[in-house]
Length: 528
Image (cartoon, rainbow, N blue to C red):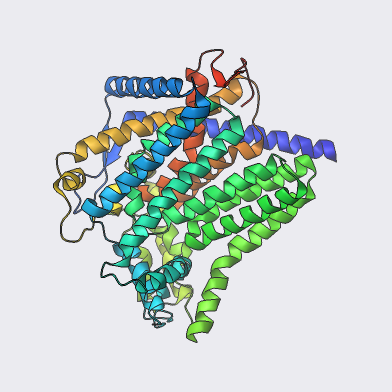
């Protein structure tokens, strides 16, 4: 039986590595050839253009040369310069975040504003938002987790004698959470590869990620959820590497369980990443024979899949009222097959309007959605060329947008933003922002592809848990090809690729005996 389990593990490992190689190759080629962007912030239509390969290549070479030069300088004295680089990246993120608060003047809008307003009501003791028909949460009850996260923070803010809206303080918290993401991923890179040059590449890539800086002003679920997932992943790596005493192993397991559950509480789509975690835990359990990993997988599944229903139930008891099941998943799938003014499969109101017009009856809403799906499938069958074009552009609109809709997500402002930032959003500087983000995305995808290629070049396979982020990323790819599209949803998967890009660039730009740490040479063919 042990041999059977080992064969299953090796086959799964090979499949994950091969699929990741194909996936990252697809990302790099499509991003290298195309750019998707929005230049009109009123319509926010996603446009697609062919890129100039020679300009792209020249820009990538220059960008990689700068990264390699700085990484090489840092690794001459890694014990002193890597901590210095980490501090500089933190200071850079904090300074940019503060400048965005002071001069970007972003305010929550759309769903972000609706959740924020619901949390404000709850913090003020107004429980009317817990209602089956008359509130935003009636349509989107999955947002109750984010409202529960914001409520105590808003209560605390209300005790401070200041007239400023609480979302300014929340943006300050989000800046710190961005730093938390960077620290957790940096530590994960160090634990996985113990390579000072890879550490340096990661910190440089994280510090030059402009969408990450802009999203620090986006008061919604993405940043806190991914910060929790990053912390949970870091502890999971420590657990799966088997380091530390039994007591520490227990703490790693429980800590990972807690943070992974919180990530789902704050953003339900994080279940995609949790499924990747469960797959990894099951495979590592059958390979190592550690039954504790099976128990952790069970607890993780129960916690992550039950945390939102439990939170909703607690609020319903508190309000002595109920929330309905909300907009149905089938209506999202139907909407993902339809055209939109912004892009194929993007939000066009179908899911919301179907649920509303059905009298908030999920059964009737699903009937309408099934009919819409059948209609689109029949049309796709009759027009295969259109179907291929539809999904090709749906894919590009999400994965070839280097800005990850960061300008659209943080567009709304109060009192007018500073001229410099206004030009980035809607003026002359926007094209430079889009161009830089496109170049950065090319380097990101190239690095991730080179990492996957290294696995095959060296004929060595990483343990399955090393590929956790890649498994989560291509799980997100499959999900959003069927679900509602939005490049903002892809932003977090781009962050998942950062550690792999760092190691991939390190492996393919290092000299044969580039020092990892002082006194520790990198041997040729060293395992990933």
